[in-house]
Image (cartoon, rainbow, N blue to C red):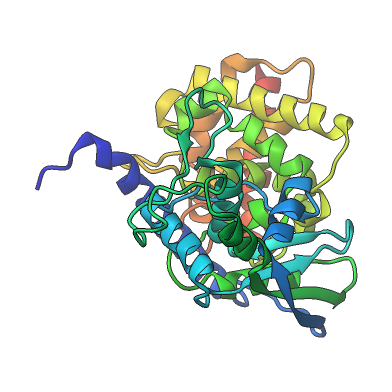
Length: 381
C-alpha cells in the first residue's frame, strides 16, 4: 500500500506515541508508571458559571488556559452546534478547573475546546490565530434556520442576553495536601483525558506546568540543528519531552528514581518558573551539544544501525555526557565521532540503552559511560 507524503508526519508521530507507550511499559517493571502520594487531600466543589463571566475571566487571565496541546480541533459546524445548544437551553458537558496552589488562579484541565469556542464566538472570529491577517468571521453554520449565519454581535438582544446568562457547570478541584506539590492534579488530568484523543504525558505537562520552563523548551525546540536531527515538529510533543529529559538529567540525574514519567513530572513542577541564569546555562549546554553532534555525527545520531527512529536512551546519555564534557574550555570537538563510535561498541552501554532503560542502574551506567568517553576522548587528543 502506498502512503502519501502528507500522511507521513501523522504516521511518524503515531510511531513516536507507540515508543512512548513501550517506555511506559518499561517503567511499569520498576514500580509502575505512576506514583500516587501515600496521602492526598482533595477539595472538590461545583459551581454554575455564567457564560459571559467565563469569557471575561478567560480574557483577563483569571482562568488560565495554556496553549492547547493539539491545537483547536473543532470544525465550524461543531463549534456552531455547541453555541446553538447553549442558545436553545440544551444541557452541555461541564468543565473541570483546578485551583493552582502557587497563584490561586483556576487552570482549565478539561473543557478547553468548549471554552475556546466561547472566546472565539464572543470575539467574532473563528479559530483566531495571532498571525492571521484575514481571520474567519464566526457566523453560526449548519444550525437552526433562525440562528444560521448569526454572529454574537448580530444575535437578537434577547438571545444575546440569554447566552450571556446561561450557566455551565464547573467542577473545581483544589489539592490541599501535599500543599506545594501539584503532581496529584497530573493524575486527575490523565484520568479525565483517558477517553477520546489520548494525550501524551508531555502534552499534560505542557498544560499543568505551564510557565517559563515550558516556554524555554519551546524555544530550544526551534533550534535549526535540533530540527535537523529530530525531524518535523511532533504533534504529540515528543521532541519537547526529549529536551525536558535532557534538562532533567543534566541538572538532576543524581535525583533520578523510576518511573521515568514521574521523574520528569517532578522536574517540570519544581522548575516551572526559573531565572535567567538557569536558562543561559541550559541553552548553552543544549545548543552547543546539538551543534557538535550534528557537525560530527550527522543525521544518524541517536539512532541504532538499520533503524530510523531516535533511541531515547541514547539521546539522553550522549547529550548529557557531551554537554558535561564540553564544560571544559579546552574541549576538542575533533574526537567526538571517535568517542561516539566507541560508545556503540561498548557492551555495557548498549545494554543500558536497549533494555530496562528506565531502571536506576541502567540510567546511571549509560550517563556515566557517555560522560567518561567524551571526556577521555578530548583529553587523549
